Length: 402
Image: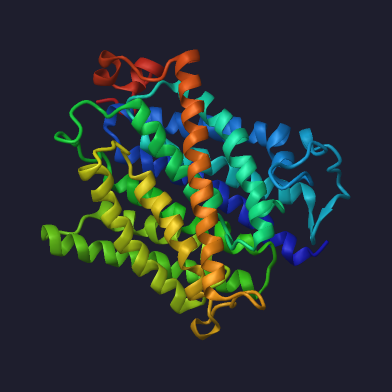
């Protein structure tokens, strides 16, 4: 065991959990109407608890235990064999399992943003639990657990495919099956608390250092470079979004600014271990522009009520960063370069294969999960519940008392 590496991953684990609780929860809660704020907080908190227990029971083993090219084994069910002496690389295996648990928590929680204000709480919980085991755990094994994409040499340092593509595509599928909120797209109600959105985004930004730099799984130069690339990408994409809004509407918005922040963070995630500072800036530039265009495409042209832009920001951002890795990993950009004998073209085809395969698998499997959930517990709230708000109708509380 390496004490320095262990100390850093202990810190990173706490940072990644901070991304969900309270970072993502506040980010999403500020974006919805005041009468639905508690429902969003409840969904994020409930998913965090359920995902933790499922990861302990089955998820970690299915993702990281030695199995076959498609799925991990069963010897680590209920974390069997992970005692105080168990080691994974230079870390206690208990710490590695906990670090990965925080990724398993935030990924289904990201999907909440696509279906807020109109879905039953029980449906959120059942979909999230099934999705974690059927979609997230297998894809994690494919990419990080020695599965078929890992064997092809896929580069996904911190989750562009594993986290952002899976969550973005699946969230859009859920939104389509669930249907749009009343009045969409002609009646779009603005966020009730932009200040809360900014606080949540700021916590996500800080937590993302654990997400990306922690994925080096060591306290070393790779972690340091991943951290600076991550920060520069977020800053660049934020300013890109600001400039676009200023040119388009005459006034840049706070919500737009911090949405750019998240787009930059999502875009740099898969490449953060491969690029240098300039690569981080270029990823932020690309992510800011492409994700902004994706928001308009998905909501206004395709008319999909992906309420808080999960596909446009996370799915498109994660895919963009994944596909740009081969071009920005060149040593000339301060990057780590590609593996010996691997050309940019070959690496790009590997990256493209990963993005397409995971997107298709996530879409098909999620559709089945959602249809099953609709048959078992129901999916959408009633018209009266949607109008009154989910805080009181489903949780018997209100976010604000006047």
